Each structure stands twice: as C-alpha cells, then as structure tokens.
Image (cartoon, rainbow, N blue to C red; front, side, top):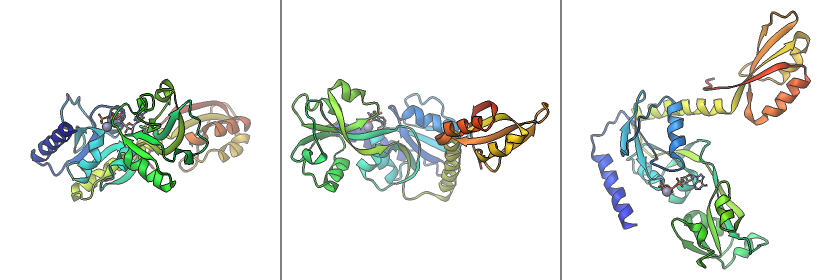
Amino acid sequence: MAKISKEKNQNKKKIASKEQSTHLLRIAIQKSGRLSEDSIKLLKECGVGIANGNNQLKIKTENFDAEILFLRDDDIPEYVADGVADIGFVGENVVLEKNKDTQIVERLGYGRCRLSIALPKSKKQINIQSLEGKKIATSYPVILKKWLRQNKINADIHIISGSVEIAPRIGLADAICDLVSSGSTLFSNELYEFETILKSEAVLILGKQLTQKRKELLEKLLFRIRAVKKAKNNKYVLLNAPNNKIKEITKYLPGLNSPTIVPLAKEGWSSVHSVISESDFWNVIEKLKEAGAEGILIIPIEKMIE
Ligand code: ATP
Ligand code: ZN
C-alpha cells in the first residue's frame, strides 16, 4: 500500500511538473487492464490518434489537442478531482467507491459488469436479511456499506484487495461482494451470485475547473463520442418493395427524418433506405418482411451526426 501511494505521488508530481500545456485536454485512461483497449478504441473512433504508448505515463495525441495519461484505474477519480487530469474514462464502480469530487458526464457503453454479493453454493440463503451478522469480503467497502445501510442489514465488512473470491474457501468470510461479468470466476470457486448491488459500465468523468479552451475541446470530444455511440446503436437498412407496399413499409421506418425512396429499373418497384435502432431491430425486420419488403440489406453505420 505504502509503495503504491508513493508511486502515485511521484507520478502526480511528474505529470504536474512538466511544462503545462493549457491548450491540451488531459484525458486519463487505464494503463493496462480491462478498460484500456476499449478506451483507446473509442478515442481512435473519435479521431483522437494514439501512438503506441511504449509504457509512457503521458503522450500527446495526433489530430486532436489532447494528452493521454495512462494510470491505474483506481487513481483516475483522484487525478481528475485534483485537476491533474481534466477528464477520465473509468468504471462507474470505481467512481462510486472512490467518492471523489467528480461528475459523470457520459456513459460509454463498454466495461459492463455488476458488483454482486456471492455465497458458497452449499449455503442457500432465502433473502438478503439472512446476511445479517455475516462476514463479507470485498474490495468495495464504500459501495457495500451504503447498500447494507439502505437495506438495514448489519454485516461485518472484511476489506481485501485482489482474489476476493477465495475468501469463503479459506474461512476468511461467509460471503463476498465482487465484480462479475460472465460469472465464470464465481463458478470455478463454487460460489453463486446472490444479489446484484450495482450495475456498472465505463463512464466519462469530469473535474471541477476547466479552462475555456479545454471546455471547448471537451465539447468537441463529447459530440464525437455521442456520434460514435449512436452509430453503434443503429443500422442502415436497404430494401426493395413494390410501390403499392411502400406506404405500409415506411410506417415501420422512422429514419433520421423520413426514409429515402428511389425508383428501381424494374417497373413498379422502389428501393427504400432508412436507419433503424438496434433495440427493436428484429421486430422491425419481421414487420418489413410481412409488409412485402424483399432483398433486405442491413449495414453497420460508422458515425451518425444529426
Ligand atoms: P489496475 O491495475 O488499473 O488497478 P484492476 O485490476 O483494478 O486494474 P481491471 O480488472 O482491469 O482492474 O478492471 C477494470 C475495470 O473493468 C473494473 O473496475 C470494471 O469497471 C471493469 N470490468 C468489467 N468486467 C469486469 C470483471 N469481470 N471483473 C472486473 N472488472 C470488470
Ligand atoms: Zn484497479
């Protein structure tokens, strides 16, 4: 612990002491871990070029006035709150646990996981009240404590960092509270997911004070992130239909404004182009087919700007 905080302070000083380039937006992302690849990918999709970091602490980006700070995810809220970084890409679970002075400005849609209470398979509990008086091992004491208080449960929180899932087996705790995505770690440790206390994903956090120039850069970046996110949630659809069916078909195609209709060389037929949302995708496709659409093509969208 002492070693980690010493290293963190040295890093902070290193970043802060270098010549401050006030015209650059300082973006903190996880150095290496589950969020690193997706954070870099999102930034690249937003036109923020990141050359290979080569284990550096800080690099300047290409095509966008920004600097990337590569940090441990646990340190990101503090760096942002202290103004060493302007914004950070980090798991909401970490933001809530660290409870620093930052605000969430955008949900990023990757790094999805849940913070759940898990119990040994041999112990079937009926309801959450049966956690009363139990010992729960976790690396998320702040979030767990809040949840226990809200549910009026008195339990003993045992803080451990790393390998929380082995705690019940070695007799250190009765239950654990840890991050889960597929559930395979729980399964291989003979635990089952008993109760989800938080659903998390990567979020963009913002500190208190940004210079005017940095505010403008953030707005620019947010505009691009939203366009990328929107494109991912939508598909471009192309289909052919006899002209007498177009009216019915276009009922199911809201599009950005209204669908584009182009006559085909084949007499009495048209091609219809539109955008549909991923969430009701299959329902819409089925309705289009029923209404007489043929040769339906679905194409991914790269960016979507309204
Ligand atoms: P660091 O060295 O940066 O401290 P870490 O080991 O604490 O890394 P990772 O395991 O890389 O962190 O997880 C980073 C984030 O990824 C988590 O805080 C969480 O938001 C998200 N995540 C998504 N799925 C999972 C999962 N199954 N287990 C843990 N974290 C997950
Ligand atoms: Zn971490």
